[in-house]
Image (cartoon, rainbow, N blue to C red; front, top):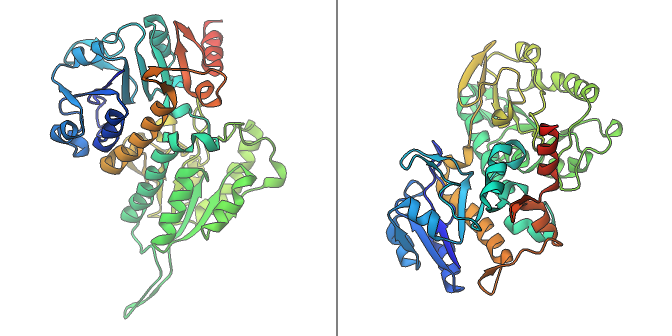
Length: 386
């Protein structure tokens, strides 16, 4: 089997699907790996590193896409401005692609993959079960985002994070609030604590209370009023509007007391829940900071502007996009391990072997044999056509 690694062409993307050490392991297992020239440059992995790992460098991207059995990417396929063709169009029927496809919000791409006869597996729909932990790219990338969000907050805040005792007086530690105690939120709490801030963590799932408290933060929530707040796959579930209103009211008191807020609340395939309305921002301390990691999905803060920093009512609001890509070396290494572990799970005797009774395959396989095989995605497509 021949595996292709193209250069990522989405603006701002600095990761590459496989690091050289992962390539070496695949080559040792008997697989052929072809890497587009310059694919690893932005992550500081030069072509020579890939050659040393046993890969072959391909100069022409169309040749790469058209000659391999499996394509490994970070971002979902898009139009390549150099060739004038969509990356899906450059693949031959029967090719397999694995990437962060975001199929629940990218239905046109799913239809294109189906019509082209491409087998697709999405790294962002890997089920959160014990067997799949080593393949869970969403968790890996969320950890990086949570870490970087804490640094952004510390850099923007006009105060110390830790308590400081100086000749000019004693200054109390900053107070932080993290919304959403998934992987990103927990990493944001841990990093902020290491920097010396006093932390609170909010989540709709009572089950995460222990994790928040184990990091030295105070858990904020009303678990006695919440039911069925987590999906079987381990993700937060969308709450009824009335319940969301109750949560916003609860959070307001904590938000106005905080020096900074890091928000990470996301619902797969849906708009991010609105947790910080503008009336809450108005009452926050001047100079407070909000880092909204849900910006790509509409934002948890009403005033978030995706991809930029704004100041509203004397509050600094960041809407960063693709934070993992700002740490391309470790982000590539982590993603590379995730995707290569999935490849190892899929390939038997150098051939693709999809067992649709397997929970991992059920969770991440989107299209196969000209059909949409993901129930969740197929239901969305059918509802959109109805």
